[in-house]
Length: 387
Image (cartoon, rainbow, N blue to C red; front, side, top):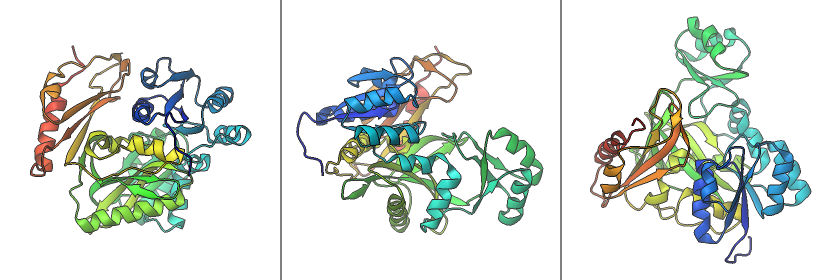
């Protein structure tokens, strides 16, 4: 384990979006300074990090500079180049967590599913797709609908296309750029996620969250999930098995389908703090961002227990075309007890772009998830990007 002192080390982060911003916010009270690398000048993390290196995510010279200025490297975006990170780490001696090998696994969803299946993690039936006939064959074997997925580059539901019939196979494949895979559609009761942490010699997880998606984009997370105790235990078991496959320390967002019989099937993994874990900032005894900082530095992990029932809602760009980012009508959020606004500092609002989130924490254990959701949705509706 790393020797602790305050002020502490410097953490280099590849990526300076909202996750980098919240990592820097969590690192500061620990005495940890953060330097981010991001191609966007004055990126969201720049206002709270010590410094920003303006460069592309695969710029080897810039990543070498980041490694020279940091004691440990991590990343908040999967666009980080695993080959460059591995080479720079080996030559500079600056460790990277999670390990670049994990990025290599995560980048390709087909590789990811194959490795997890081989490790005994429950995954939906899947296969590689070379042409439309492969999709039609999958429908024969799995039934309709099936889910066509881009193997690389997809995020926030992008690159995922439900295929309802064989007649749609050709058009669906054309809509997915690059290599693809297909999965059997899982009849699920709910979608849940486990924010799990792999530390130096320990693992931890937060209470499972229930995720509500619209058009494949995460809109709301409810904690604790409205699952049975047995289903929640099973989710944590699957998450622990996933961590065994992942190489390197840090936070992993593990998305699961909960079936009607309480079984869990893995959907996807993010080797970093995850949108469905933003609620932890106010809703738990430590945040996923603090845990990630602690884990990658090799420090002891913090407590992960829930404070009170919590709901988070994403503030998406409700605009028809790109425009300057300005959120109006936030008074109701600020006036509501237990409500917390997080603004990501993005200068441009785009359709469905994540611009911020609101967390609403119950003030006692008597408030139901339904009551929290109703209030949180009202707060989301009160704020708008339209002037």
